[in-house]
Amino acid sequence: MKRKVLIIGAAGRDFHNFNVFYRSNPNYEVVGFTAAQIPGIQERIYPPQIAGVLYPNGIPIYSEDRLEELVKSKGVDECAFAYSDVSHEQVMHLACRSMAAGASYVLLGPNETMVKSTKKVVAVCATRTGAGKSPLSKMLSKKYKRKLAIIRHPMPYGELVKQEVQRFERMEDLDKAKCTIEEREEYEGHIANGAIVWAGVDYEKILRRAEQEHPYILWDGGNNDFSFYKPDLLVVVADALRPGNELMYYPGEVNFRMADIIVISKYSQNKKGAKLVEENAKKVNPKAKIVMADIIPKIDGKVRGKKVVVIEDGPTVTHGGMPYGAGWIAAKRAGAKIVSPYKFAVGSIKETYAKYPHCKNVLPAMGYSDRQMAELAETIKKLKVDYVVSGTPMNLEGLLHMDRQLVHVTYSYNEKEIAPVLKEVEKVLGE
Image (cartoon, rainbow, N blue to C red; front, side, top):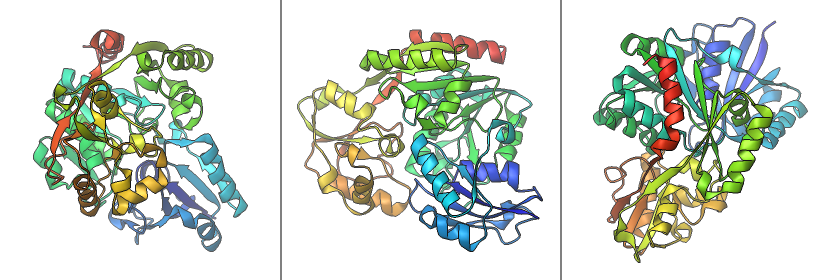
């Protein structure tokens, strides 16, 4: 008899685990997905066109709030947890909810979910979202350009059939695909570097397509998830500003324990924190090479003495738990007068602050829909500021009509400090 499975997810890892483990498996019947973290992605259908022959009607996606009800009404045997950047405590709360309703609780590991490539694979992952993996992966795309297929962790929040395999070569491709702010934050820098970005829903299909065009593969991780592909070199970024998190969050601890290289980022901002991360690395992963590397933010000096509001990368300051990011640090160092935006927030932006009150001094770059982007712009218009300081790694000017001058913050690793990582990548790729 088939075991009935409910996959607990957030439109990413859950779809991947389904595709590679459950989709063609006659021993299981996936009765639904649940959705969390990302607004507006529940109450959809994982479409039959990509769900496979065992699921001619597709698979419904429900709100995670309905977990217990779904376990009981659908006779669920197993709840399979499948998303990232959550505390160990939250993982186990979901386990207890599942088990109290009668189901078993499952975590699928690397052996069952990593796809093997025919090409050399370098994976850049992290212990928490916002740790600093994106500037590292962008350094690699700048160095190798189209030799390296940049395959980004999924963010499929739109029409899933159209997003099954996505290829982004030009900025216009982002417009055609109606990419969200979060997607653009990750894709634009690579495209500007002359690289091609791949993403979507079916990551085995994506890999096989990319292998036809590129000699090497870069897995550009999302949140603190572990790689969808079996890496020949795993580089994991740990955050000195959140010491101890590398052993407290799932699946970031998996990355920390598997890493070939651990990059301790932002170490000069918290030297004691960096030391604690280093000590933890030596305890749980003594074979890993440890690299201390600062991320250096840069900003135009014209903000000195001016009133500004700071927009930060959304995931970093929401479920990533950071009260601020590179934008706030750069603006503070430049002598700007930072205005707290939360009292002026409208619509879903106001709801974001209610859910994540720790980040009230910055404005999360929430833009998962046209409505949310309009609410973000409306919030900015209500603020009496001279400039909008953008700490996101994308150009917001074309998306937000906010009647304010935008000042961009750029940030990158100290090249001398990160050089040992680049040398290891060269060895693995044979360059």
